[in-house]
Image 1 (cartoon, rainbow, N blue to C red):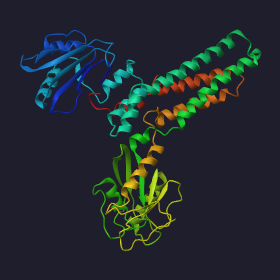
Image 2 (spheres, helix red, strand yellow):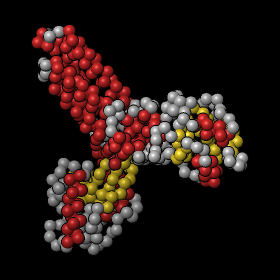
Image 3 (cartoon, rainbow, N blue to C red):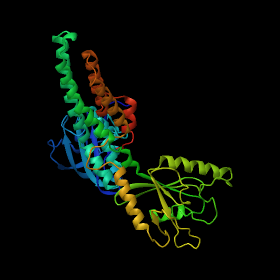
Image 4 (spheres, rainbow, N blue to C red):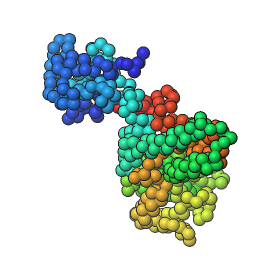
Length: 432
């Protein structure tokens, strides 16, 4: 059975072969394990070159840089050792096998190093979520936003709110202790209410920003129109590869095709859909049409290639007059773009417009943003604080302030559930 008191080890660098492999050992027996392999315990935080040997048969496995970080001043908050060895597969396998022979050591589970850092107060939950986003970042915007949260930008904001709410709670408790509830002066009540208003406004401003998930999942651009309107051809041109089958046969695309791509450093998810028509579709094609309509509802941007005015009645729709070099091309009077995916005419202008619109939808990488979990808790904190503004009963005010603190605690993980933590840290790689 796994225990938080176990000493764990894992490869924390990229998969071999590589120039360097970094093996990390964390737990109460980390120093003992390093000493067993090298016959030395390096000075804390001073790298030294040592021979790594198999403690059973004395075989030389490698010469490696080793580091020793006594807890609690380490990345995980407990004793931590690192072996920076040559990055060949055989070398890493041999050292891992030697570590497995040491009593009390086991291989780490995914995300276990980061979870121990969280458990020992080296990072909070908001920072851990930022680190998770950073590990999966593929675009510059994703990286910038993740770095901010992993570096504690959101946590510092939460901490500032907590300190202000704690100060208000202290004032309320003092009034409850030293005066009769009915004797609380109106100006004292007004002082609490006036102090709460900026907090409510500040939280509301953060909640109004786009969610962090948009950066991770990408802007959903759905291509819609009737059969043979050029959706698949346009998709392939936008992603610059043959992602969708192109055919003159009506109904070729019967299911949703999703293609992620970065344009101008911004993540997009382009979605090709079945051709939409009101009649003539057989059973399987009709299922595809129903799914296409569902995609329209979830889209951030719709590129409509059908007849003018026949697309979904949504503000995010862009009329496209595509295949302008086709003999059967029918111009659109109100088309935002007239283009040819085959020749490339008008494509650059379309891509530029998509990037402009995306920047209005995505959170600013230089600003703090919250994900859906954090937003739900922040909404709770804002709502209970809002109730304080019109409340004169100090007992109720004190309870609202307590509930606000509790919701903010859950954002940073000071009040959390094991299931939620398992879900988060389980997404990390083994050596994190």
